[in-house]
Image (cartoon, rainbow, N blue to C red):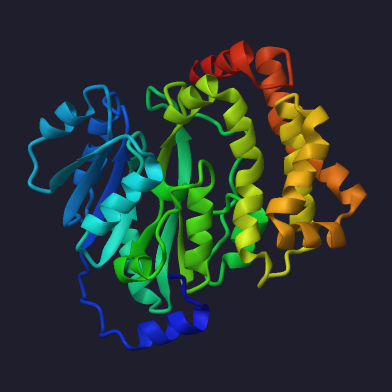
Length: 356
């Protein structure tokens, strides 16, 4: 069930005053995470505002993930084992097992600084209209050293952030590893969409933004780890054709859900076109563009209608080049690798240079 903002306000008006020290359950989905999960959990146990539980959902790992978690001697840790279904299913399993006032999400290779939860709880207690809070994020490599991000993700600030989330695509800094949300609010939604291969987090933040304000901590309390052992990257290598289809259409499918009730700006529509053209170039699939557009018309009619009405060729071309070039980042990449294209051996060379 998804509520409107008016229904959300009525829902919260009927709630009793929350306790002065609300409890937090941390949900960590884990798949073949043995290499990093001990450090991830340690960053939660080091919080100045300790959670009630750390719920680790092992998504059918085939490595030593379960053994590593079971070897950590803490009464705060609760391990749930499931078959390998996917990260959304794992997060939803954790949500259903949670009992605390708030739920915090953390991916199994990311880290928190010690005051992350304390700052977020303070923000939410200061603003009763907000039931979700996120923090600024920084990026690290496999070794835990700072790693520059080629395409920094802008924060969408606080308050009513729905339009910003939908216009920026990835406007929640740190995404799942950053967000703290009231459990009762989360349970009024249909949780993470387990059918989405991409952007399940963006879709979920958009649904939350429709019913509550967001708060924002502008401090880098979250460390996102970028590394070559990412499950998503390995899956991409194994199922490249399937990944192209999923990547192409995850964004339109998400935007279609809100297109009937929300008119997107011309800039947002052109970002959608630019993203489609960019991915056609990236996946060397320009010849399939007409078929992709036909699929858009057939499967996302409300969005396609807006795209037809608001399309601006000049702005779309400009955004395409902005997407693909990102001049400062590409220049940095060129000086490290001799190319403005990030892929394969050049990507590895770039990240080696970052670690040096």
